Length: 142
Image 1: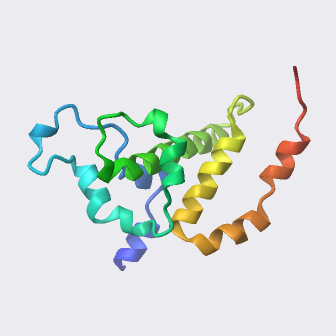
Image 2: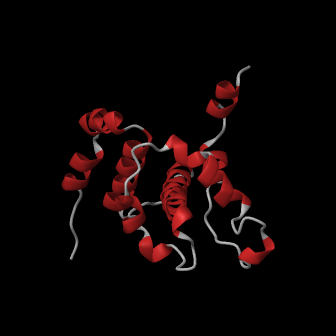
């Protein structure tokens, strides 16, 4: 079994848990000034997102604590997007209602993450997308 095999067998929840979601209370407790997950983002995970643009961080800027250093802001944005998608996935898998979910926002997160991982994949993903059509067909209530 190779390292790639092990990584490919991680669950979505395990993968999303690798990213920094909550900033440390006291950065002075860390020799580098960064938490373990922030260091993981800086030195490893960020390299898995060659197509990452500042758009994702801008979309989630309100959810990112102002004390988060700029070096790891993108990591927090990825973490927030992944966490929201993980929660939606769990709601669907538990057959809970998803009527109040902002599906357009979650789709935008999915597109942004797909582009960040592999920019050329986004076009293929959009061609196969049925969510936009389904959203247009949903009933509107005032």
